[in-house]
Length: 211
View 1 (cartoon, rainbow, N blue to C red):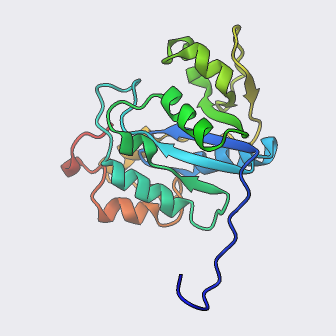
View 2: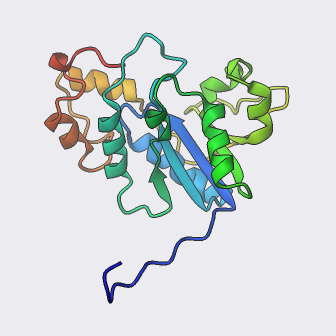
């Protein structure tokens, strides 16, 4: 460290850590509203966005380049000190499985209570996730509500907590379709993300069919 430079203190290790996996193709305001609700309702110390390398639930779809998706996420989270991006699934390569990611965060933070954000539409398929029993034991799932629909429930070993705050009916696929058709998305994404999408030519007809 250069002489005279003051080292910033390290933040304390999180006691309650949220993990938010997904393609984020691209990130939109709904993602940020859900993340904020999780932080406030569960009193999380930190929330980590984890862009997937390749989702096991979307085998036929090709997402935008992972470095672009991660860069858009970092841009969207600027100024939010307790939210961060971790590219471990992208760096790992291949299909991204949640249990592998959870085990890595357990290794890094052995004392933390782990929470995994999940869309309500995925709850019914939890038994199909890789090493489902181990995953059920390792994390509490924070269920993202669907606007206008009742809370989802299910039997089994799963610990589910329903988020209440700010469901927004917007999806990444809707944003990709609007860009492909030349329609504006400024009102659906964080500041600067629309311009970044345009400057890199993401999701346009010329860019090809993105997942």
